[in-house]
Length: 158
Length: 158
DNA sequence: TATTGTTATACTCTATAACTATA
DNA sequence: TATAGTTATAGAGTATAACAATA
Image (cartoon, rainbow over the protein chains, first blue to last red):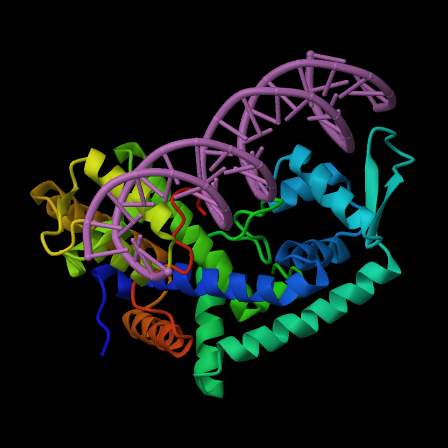
């Protein structure tokens, strides 16, 4: 029976440990496609905020507008999203998903659900519901915006 | 009622989101002390594996031996740990905590417990037990070694 | 003057390979 | 030949500040 250091049973540590693992697994799964978890996240947010400006999206995701440039460049280079000049404010772009972007989002969603199932394999249906419910409540209580990674960096990952 | 993109309710994403938050919060808490979460982790592992070599510790933590050099240098420079030549193998060191290292570990443990309590503030005692139990079982089922971060990088955050 | 998007730059981190000394 | 520890280095990622165009 493994014991380990005291932090091994800390909820904060367990969340970090499992969250990092989930992230690495998903990233590993997307690597052969030349994609990163952040692509899935960006597509989801873009689908939910179609037509918003880079600045607005950057604010919503908690990143600097200069970081958003690279994120949108990336999506645009892959043909997943496009910039259109905002007629009302010629400094700004409005952001839009392409058909390919919407389609890819659907495929990545299926992969993500598969990963979720694998991660929760050890729990029965009731336990899964309880866990997800507890996590969602914690995230909300801690002030986390739904679907917003507290550290969406254009790179890394970790 | 916030909705968000589909991944907002994915268990993998929730774990990543909350794990990242917990990590950032703890890091923020340690910053004024000039410390990083990895210091707490290293002290804990060292306390549990006193006398092992850098190589052995690197293997246990899943990092390269060249990365372990910097981690141990760091602890040694702070007077928290020390290298002693292994009499049985003059290539190797054995690693040991100092009194200051043990003392600091205790103080960081108290801080970590405070952070845990704050993170779980929204749950009652029974829910907390259920959550920690579920997380510990998942970590074990996924093959995670107790207290070992899947990505102990000497830096970042991440 | 303030804001949108962009670029440039300096900084930090990280992973690899190459070296030494022992075995 | 293989292993413990170290060093050097190149690559990746990140955060800041400064800029041009428009408001």
